[in-house]
Image (tube, rainbow, N blue to C red; front, side, top):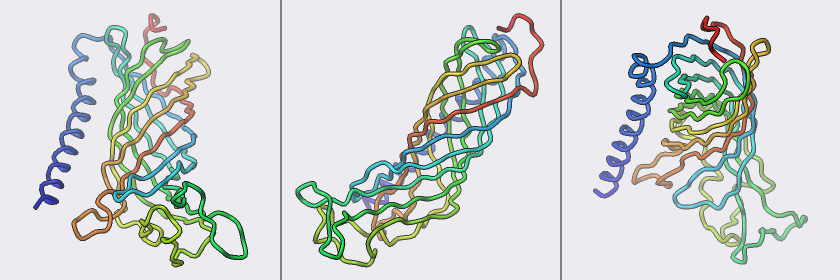
Length: 265
């Protein structure tokens, strides 16, 4: 009964968060439109970056950050300037490498070394490829056409699992629990069960714009997954297995449609 109540509370929380985010998105396009300065700017381009990811397992799995590449297509529509805030929506389609990297330590917080022909410490990582689609509400402050602009953005993101690759220097079927401080090893042999991911992105950065060259952007963002890669029912091993990603990326955009207003700086 407690597990059912817990799942109901989590589902309600997810719905409330996603509803609030979508409401924030559309409020930028509607409530501000009556009093702000009109914009009709459309820019497209691409991005490339580096992600550092882990998974919040329950029961806990000791981990470090797994590095991976991310790149993709970006489009941005700027719709309004409300006082000093430049309001826009951003959509992306990205290929991302995310996953987890285990810390295989003994009870003395030292790397585990098996008695074998090698003295190399045990290592395990799982890198998964996803197509990620964030939809972000963006607020910027500064120059739009020539100069610098700081910005903040937030919104929902969905992801579609493509494939996975495991890197390890030991046989995954080898009994290593007696050597580890953590007895949780089920994840080492479990394939991804839920191929659809969803969560919330929040981040910010700095943009430099030039009327002739386009927009150059550097940003950092954090993704908190609300879904799990494994089943999370009472019968499943893990009660939680959701992503947490830190991403640093560079983006280049060029204007397709630009508002005709000589006063825009």
